[in-house]
Amino acid sequence: MYNTSYGFRIVTIIKERIKMNLQIEDKGAAVLLLVEEDRLDAHNSGDLKNQMLKLFEEGKHNLVVDLQAVRFVDSSGLGALVSGFKNASSRNGNLKLAGLQLQVKSMFELTRLHRVFEIYTDSGEALASFQQ
Amino acid sequence: MTTDRIAVDIKVPNQTRYLCLIGHIGENIAHTLRNYSGDREKLAYDLNLVLTEGMANAILHANQGDPAKEVHIEISIVKNNLFIKVFDFGQGFDVEQYIKPSHPLDDHGRGVYLMHTIMDEVTYRQTKTGHVLEMRKIL
Image (cartoon, rainbow over all chains, first blue to last red; front, side, top):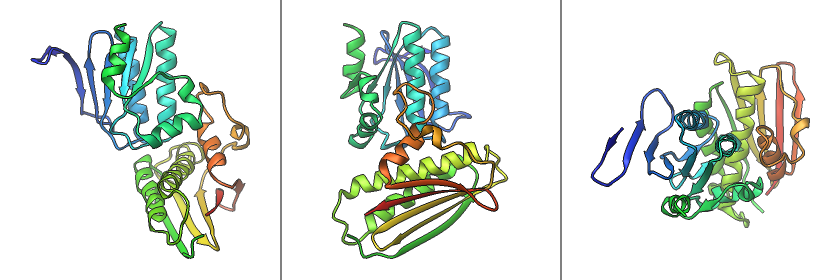
C-alpha cells in the first residue's frame, strides 16, 4: 500500500493468478473495487467474491463496486455481489454499486435485486454516500 | 417474424473460459437475424444470458467441473422458433427446485429462474450419454 499524488491510497492492483482485471483503491470511508471486465460471469465472479472476502478479513466493511466497464452479468456475477452484500451487512457495513449499464441494471430489476442494493450513477456519488 | 434458417452445432471443453465464446455466438445471431421486429439489443443480451447460464450449469453442476468432459451446444432457428440445446455428459442436476423465483438474497437458483423467465419453454431430460437442457423462444 502506498500514497499517490492524487490523495488516495492504492491497496493493491490485482493482476496475478486471477482471471479478473480488478483495481482496488482504499478511498477512506469505503474501498472502491473497479471491475475492468466486459463480462462478470461464472468464469471470473469467484475472483471478485474472493477479493471482497479478503477485504472483509482486513476489516474493510464498506465497499463500492464500480461496474461501468461491465456490459454483461450472469447469475454467478449477481451471486458474487449478493455474497459481498450479505458479508458487508453482517459486519455492519455496506456494499453499494455504481456505473451500471442499462442492460446490467435490467438484470438487477429482473431478479428484484435493485431493491436490495443502493445503486448510484457513478462511484463518486456512491463514495460520497458513505461520508454523509 | 424472421425468415432465417440457422443451425449452429459446437462442442467445447468443460471449462468456464468458453462461456464468453458461446455467449457471443448468441449475441451475433440476434444481431444477424433478418426481419426481426423486436428489441434486437435485448434479444442479444437474453441469448447471451441463457447460453451462458445453460452452459455454466452443464460445466459446474452436471459435469461437476471435470475438465476432461465437454459440453455440446446446438442453436437452431426453424419457422420463427429459436431452439437451444445444451448437452452434458454427467450426472445432471435438479432443475425443478429452482423454477420458482428465489428470494433476492438466496445464494442459488437465479440461473434457472432467469432461463425460465426469458425463454418460452425450458426442459431438462436424460439422454443415453447424459442430459440435455432444451429451450425454445418464439421470435
